Amino acid sequence: MWDERYSNEEYAYGKEPNDFLKAKYHKIPKGNVLCLAEGEGRNGVYLAKMGYNVTAVDSSKVGLQKAEKLAAENGVTLNLIHADLAEYDLGTSKWDGIVSIYVPFHATLRGELHKKVVAGLKTGGVYLVEAYTPNQLNYNTGGGKSIETMVTREALVRELNGLSFLHLLELEREVFEGKYHTGLSAVVQLIGAKLD
Image 1 (cartoon, one colour):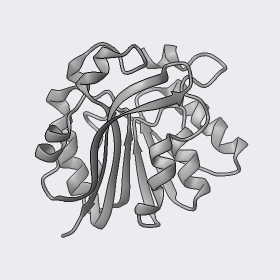
Image 2 (cartoon, rainbow, N blue to C red; image 1 turned 180 degrees about the vertical axis):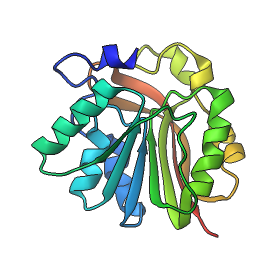
Image 3 (cartoon, rainbow, N blue to C red; image 1 turned 60 degrees about the vertical axis):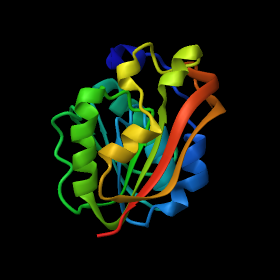
Image 4 (cartoon, rainbow, N blue to C red; image 1 turned 90 degrees about the horizontal axis):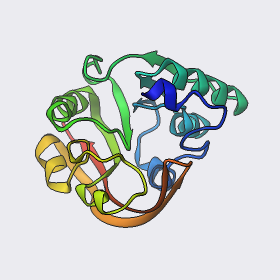
């Protein structure tokens, strides 16, 4: 599905970074950042421009090729990894930051991924998330039709044991990110820091 979505010349979610990431990226300590399901590279490229060393992982080779092209257009480089997130090893105490923007990860696998996220962060490292909540099904503005790939504030608290939450909010906001994420949306935003 993702290779097909990314196969057009235009960027499916645009070339600009996510608004929440753009507003809050400075909460991530400077250093090594992992962007989960990074797709065509818009968020990773932005972070690289802000001085981070960015690794972008995605299951779509087509998306990663476009991420490489976008990075070149912006005069930065990304470390691109083609992998399935369900199998990808995030390592231990490796990342200053991990970023997850609208990753449609199924609930049964998301809990395992979040254990790997907590383990993968260095002490002081930050996890930054924006995701659709189940209320997004009331809109037709992105995120698909499966409640299983959406997440609540409560689920994030439960799954991210080991993080201290600096920001955790469910809200409705206007999202304008390419043709697939456009309009009033129900989202959850999280910034969590690993304290020990």
